[in-house]
Image (cartoon, rainbow, N blue to C red):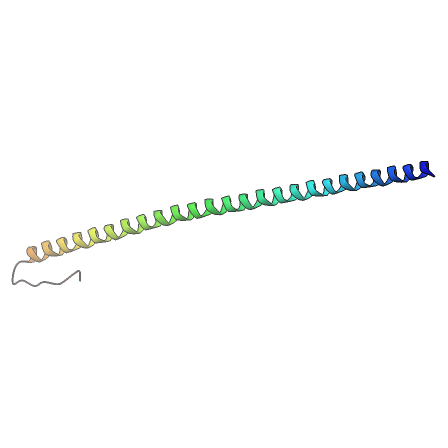
Length: 102
């Protein structure tokens, strides 16, 4: 009877150890999944930050291009006004003048 109790105790100890090993494996699996999810989240966040930086650069470039276009338009209007003035001078005061540029 005592040997039977010892054997039963040993089996219960072995069963408990097996359950503990299984629980440890499940915990490691959960830790690995969590680490993987964190890594994916960081990758997505990093990609998002990169995309935002690229979009900011594109916006900056578009604004610079717009400013350059505005300056070019001002210069063209100034040249047109100067040419109109020369034309009016060439036609002479009191001569027939037509306004070419508004």
